[in-house]
Length: 132
Image (cartoon, rainbow, N blue to C red; front, side):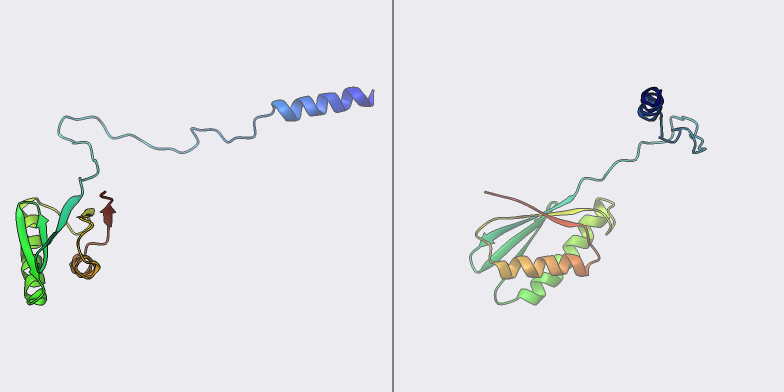
């Protein structure tokens, strides 16, 4: 008799459903309309950094800036202006993602300074694309 009770107890424990119901949260979907556009993730802003004699070249969109050893600070200021122009023309915000594509020949010092400029501009979602 005890065996039957334990078998029934195990059967009820195994077959019991302890999950909460899936429809317990009340919500209401907005009505479908043609005017609403689906919200998606914005394509990241690509910043290309290539090696050049005496410095590096930074290309953002259709704008390019040469950063030279002799005038790094002035060239970074020009980079900020070009970045502002590209962001305004593409209607981007500082919360949009940025993807840095750096060629292997570029000196680390230039990459760090360009990263600092982007971060100082207010862009915090910065990633690196691997190149080979």
